[in-house]
Image (tube, rainbow, N blue to C red):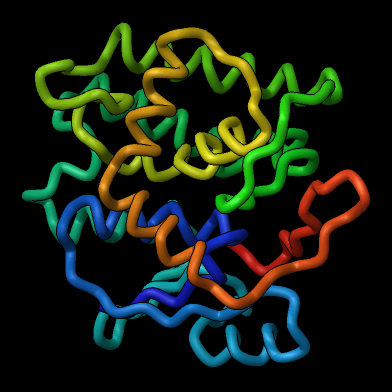
Amino acid sequence: MHLTIGNKVYSSWSLRPWIVLRAHGIAFDETVIPLRTPETAELIKKHSPTGKVPCLADGAQTVWESLAIMEYLAERFPEKAIWPRDTAARAHARSISSEMHAGFQNLRKHCPMVVTQKFSAKPLPADVGTDVARITAVWNEARMTYADPSQGPFLYGAFGAADGMFAPVVTRLHTYSIAVDPISQAYIDAVLAHPAYRDWLTAAVAEPWILPQNEGEIPIVDLRARS
C-alpha cells in the first residue's frame, strides 16, 4: 500500500487515514508532498486523480477521499475492527464521521491545523463555538453510550475510523487552547498521547516546509489541496 499525503504540519485530511493505518499496524509506504508550492498541484496529480490528498494506492486499486479510504481499509482488513463491531455503535460512528467529513466549516476556517504550534486562548467567532459544542456533544455521546472502556479511551473504546476522522479536530482544539468539558478533554489527551499521533508529530516537527503566518500568528493554510 502507498499513501500520498500533504505535509504533516498542515494536512488535516492526510492525517485521517494515515493515523488509522498506523494505529492498526497496516504496513504502507508514503509520499509526502508539501502544500502551497508552485509544484504542489503537479506533484499531487501524479498520484491522485482528483489532484487532492490523501490518496491510497493498493496494487492496481486507487482510493481517494479520507472517508472512502477508511471504508476500503475496513473491508480489506476486517480483522482490524476499524469500525466498531457492535451494530449500533458502528452506525453512530459512521454517522458522526460523515458529519465530520461534510461539516464544521467555521472551525476549519478559523482554526486551521498546524500541529507544531500552541497558541494562547483567544476569543473566537460564535460560529466556532457552535461547532465545538456539537463536536463535544457527539464525543460525549460516543463515550457515554457506545464506548467499551475496557477496550481503550477512544470514542468507541479502541482506536478506529471515527477517531481518525476527528484526530485533526483534536489537534485544532489543542493548538488554539479551546476549553472543553472533562470527558472531551480526556479524549483529546488520549489521542495526543497515541503512539501513532506521536509519530506523526515527530515527523511534522522535522519537516522543512513552513507556510507564512499573518500578524496574529494564525497559520495561513491552503485548504484546497485536500479531500
